[in-house]
Image (cartoon, rainbow, N blue to C red; front, side, top):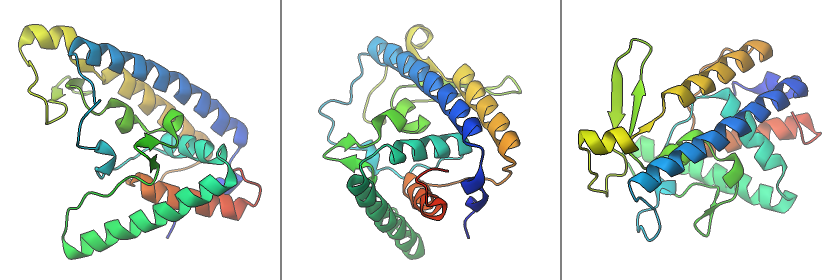
Length: 213
């Protein structure tokens, strides 16, 4: 059962304001990521392993609605292709789960190794790769080692210069998310793959009949 139906009547102005804040945040995420990647001399170019085959879960309403805006901007035929492929991928995930398998499946937005919604891609798609750190509200710090194919220099000196600090960016996204949920009266938890989000997006856009939420 969908958790999103009432969003078809959501205030478009509220969604558009949140989308503007998301664009600005994503832009700063990209610049911060590029600085860290450059510091580590890291690039995905030539890598034989495609991270678009990983099954990532996403948890924010703000990113879901921003993804929908990207889908709405596509030509109708291309959008239909993505909807159909997303349904196939979501079913593959369900089948793999039933069989206890952990198989890689290409993201339904990937076309010839390029993202069809690059400007609207989600946070993890933007930040995955370089070593990072994040301070939790209780002041503890967690770290991630980045791409497992790279033998990173994790020395204190290199980390101080290059490690990507996600803390402030995550906090800002959390603020956008909390405010958006409050204004739209949305209290459901989200844990969805991109494929599942796209399937839900098709349902919402079909119900609305106007091409918009």
